[in-house]
Length: 128
Image (cartoon, rainbow, N blue to C red; front, side, top):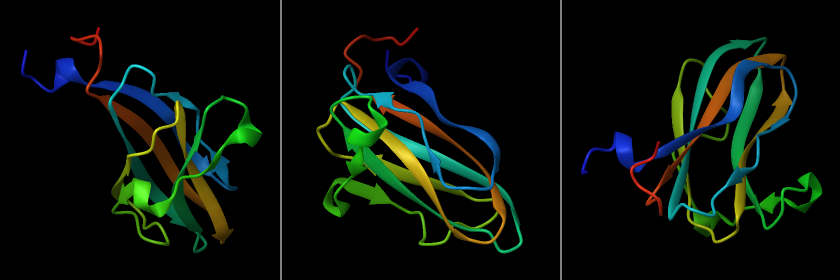
């Protein structure tokens, strides 16, 4: 099979919602994937909400074990301040078992946002 649908897996990383504070995404298990990227969607921004996005990694799912991914291990088209009604890609090139996306609030009120992890080069294909 050469279709993209059967060769990727999508997992919820941040459930779509109005975010009024910094938000740690869910830990995504990369064990059976050779590649990973996060797709972040934003909606309305209230009162100049100033949010940024970054990736973190860990060998465990313990929240305190996650650390920021080195800039050399991330491909991203996300700006320093996220814009309303936009879509961004953050590609992970690290080697840890788990990765997550993090939204950080620097000011303002809120932003509508959600994210999906897209896993590729799966060991077991096609993805069910």
